[in-house]
Length: 355
Image (cartoon, rainbow, N blue to C red; front, side, top):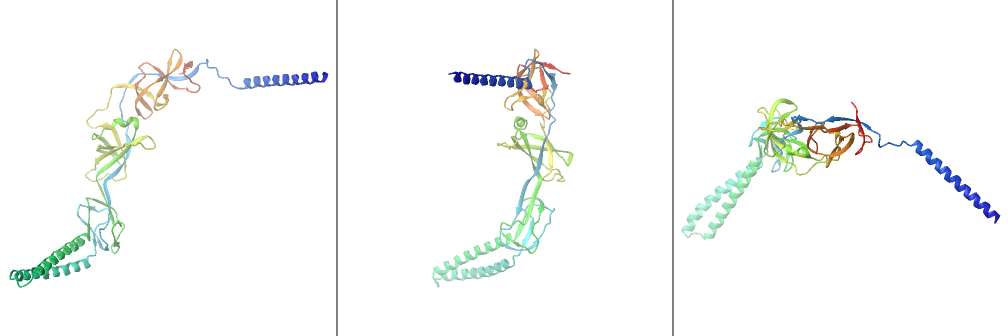
């Protein structure tokens, strides 16, 4: 019994020492860890909102592409006798570009023409004889059918001869020539590349919120980086229905090139989002720094300062340009918003404004 009391006392002593040590460790840890005082005022930077004249001079960068471009190939097989153009040559629609060997086809044409000549003579002779009932009518019919067949063969050979002259499908410039005289041509093998840059396509990627600035069939001012002094006009022909990885949409313009075709395929350029015939909007609006916006793209927010406290405010934005954002709802002139000092900031925090 005595031993039991001794063991129980030792156990209680160990428990007491353990509890004491744990409490001491907790106090030490609490003392070492920084405890933020939420009542302490946070030093921030802020601005007082005022209406500003808004002039949207932001431009969008894109690439010029040819209106039409194709690789020319032969419809029939044959050896190339002559390539009549070179890279850089300007060609017109229907102009001869390549001449294939057609000597065998010409011989076949001569042979069938001789055959047709003989059949035409037979038809005349058999017609006279059949009218005189000197021969059976079936013989005349067979000769007439043979003449029709020979004429079809002649038309087929002539069509093949015509296809030995490869012509330009549209007017443009020869931009590639992967073949030479003596090479063998076959259907599907590219022989020349023709590019039409008299009209161009210009494509830019526009963020979702700024897509409303471009309207189909409206004309806009463009320029090429290589010729910034040359003013071009582009009409919106297409707005993409699917966003890319950056959540932007392609907008395509149809652009007429200069008289000297100075704008080349692959050049970079810019377009202003103000349609020709429409003036820039100079009405005063609320403009805030983009860095002052917190929250999400779906629901942007800012911190308003009211009675010395930071208050989260939902806002509606319309146009983002460079490092600024136009606000269309949620704020009014005279509001004070926080632009810097967001560390430890929370809704309802006490704040002081630094100069």
